[in-house]
Length: 366
Image (tube, rainbow, N blue to C red; front, side):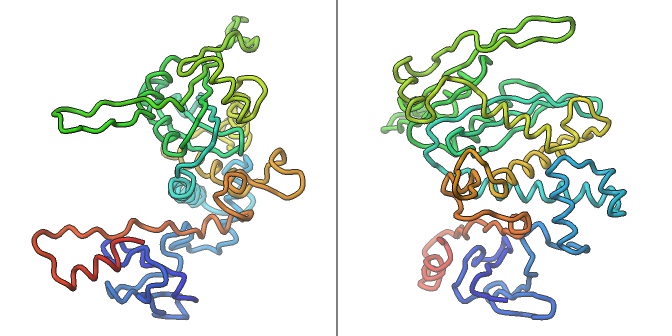
């Protein structure tokens, strides 16, 4: 136990999220608990991780989640480990929520990705249909997040593009399919406020000249009740000229415009989650469980899965290729990772005393 590497996780504490400030002491070595001097409260060593309040061995939960991330259905795990089905479902939901928090903290930061591919995945659940919109960068194979909705409409695409915009900076080439909703969603998500300049009303929004959007339109033909894809029919340049998009494509991956990487990740999801198979007896019942499963597999893909196309010498994950981490994470390390809360913000009014100013200087920023 090392108090210098632990922060206070309580949201109402002024010292929350700070490491190495001398406010954390050991409360009990036997129970592995710490104490914060500022708020006077104690907390467990696992507080803030996915292993918090776990009544089973941590190795068992790690093994079960590994099986879930490789397409093993819950009934098979129940038969093998004699666990309750509700326990496994609770672990899956808890780990998915934790993985989403880790993803929003580490992955959703402005980085130069050069090219991003986006697509939607149709999923059949119990008595309903869900649509999952996702993005990935083909340069580092980094998965940039997902949004889940019951309809393939404007709200789904806009939410996903907004999440993607938080991950990007500089020149970005967006490649999507022929869905017309992407045009307005990209323009809304990447537009920058010009500033009021003393005028009344909403500031004018300016679309940056470094964002390019190309749509790949495929041709289909009906064969009974199914549709057969015959490949790319045409490419549309929605934002930027053919020359600009060609230069952006050359600087990122080269080759031809396509959505091959995101479509390959769609196949990875169907292979890694038992309920995503096209013809399966195991279906999800709730949208929240689908989102948890997607974020758990996606975060494991970013941090715990070696991608052979990234490096032929050293084992490299998409997070390592993007510069987020410098080593290969284990599943247990991902579950034990603690997301730091936002720093304390002083909300008082009036003149501030010297003691208050010293407190703000010490705890208001990391």
